[in-house]
Image 1 (cartoon, one colour):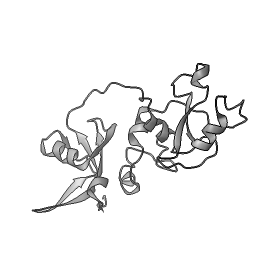
Image 2 (cartoon, rainbow, N blue to C red; image 1 turned 30 degrees about the horizontal axis):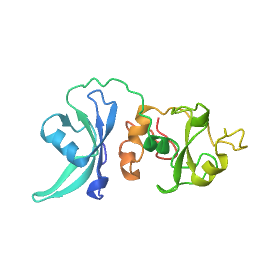
Image 3 (cartoon, rainbow, N blue to C red; image 1 turned 90 degrees about the vertical axis):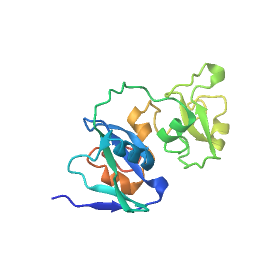
Length: 189
């Protein structure tokens, strides 16, 4: 027998995990898109799943599953992660890769390990999150030349990593059937 869990939260926090018909994770969607898919008959509650958000309506309380599964399988070709500032920040957990300082949106910069002026490219392995102080200290040098050690070697994240970061802690427990959270919300297997 399964237990039922109700998750009450603000409308903007009502995240829903969208699953393919095979129950593989597609992405996280907002509650409004989930309701649209359910009422159009394109999605349904997963089998033997009783986790839901409570949504107050004029007719009472609607129980929206925190995960929904598409009725028909959708072939989704694999794509590499787009390299952009936001995804670099997410990969690096909004942390300076030199001094370990957690950064606010006004404090971060993106640093080229091999500077652009020396042929450094915009690749996952050449870009890291850095605070302004460390980026200025490193200047137009490599980390080795500047005697600065990286927290970890940068690498290209998986597509799922980028799509699933930033989930709220109440909801991710409801998704444990499909997503294993390791330590923090940014380590997903």
